[in-house]
Amino acid sequence: MIEARHLRVLRAVASTGSFSAAGRELGCTQPAVSQQMKALESSVGTPLLVRTGREMRLTQAGEALVRHAAGIIAGLTAAEEEVAAIAGLRAGRVRLVSFPSGSSTLVPTALAALRAAHPGTRVFLEEAEPPNSVELLREGDCDVALAFRYEGAAGVEEWDDLVVRPLLTDRLVALVPDGHRLARTEGSVAIGELARESWIAGCPRCRGQLVEVCEGAGFSPRIDFATDDYPAVVGLVGAGLGVAVLPQLAVESVRPRGVRTVALEPAVRREIVALTLPDLAQVPAVAATLDELARAGARQSAAR
Image (cartoon, rainbow, N blue to C red; front, side, top):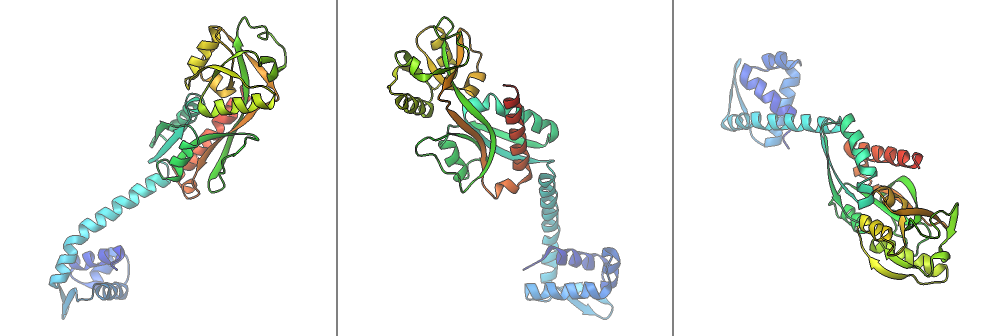
């Protein structure tokens, strides 16, 4: 196996014509140069130099190796510099997958801070809801995945094989039209008080959680509309077409007009986290992204 340090010694010997001159150029002793040349010849299995008295000349194999050495050493130097840049956060790439309400609230704050601190690090953003986003992470199609899971929900997804960075706890709130009988309620409202209402359901996972919570309160919600688009949910509620339950982060991601948010009892919360693989967590750009997402989550929680 050819080592880069041996190639550097070979080039020095070829350019200076002697072990002692190569040693002076490289800052080492003549015996050290001789030992490294012997090691290189042993690695390639053929002589590289012909020694005639005080003169040295390259064999055909030596000439071929010197000819390739410049490109090999240049490539290694470029690779070392690029890796050093990535390790020092002067460069790097992070592929981030987030669910929509995270993309419009936590992600912009985190990425703005990351760009300010490390302008050479690039982040590529795609959207996917969990568990799809988590599967993308496990399959190597992204480096960081924003995900959530509901507290106490049946069939809670396991993340034991992943690095889990908690960001914030998000509570579900009810959305009612501005003129609704519960719109000015102080404190919390039992979800059972909305049993006879028309419902507008959100994303499939939130929809499933809504049905589970309602059934736990003794009724099945009559879902008249279902949409994955949070602004559409708010618009339908604002038009008086029904009520809805959304995560607070989803409400904060839009400008709710014509609606009121009402706290619910029993409280239903979801844990919002950033996930990555254990090996990726050691990559400086990924670690910095996780740190900024955690800070964004802390700021979001403090602002409530």
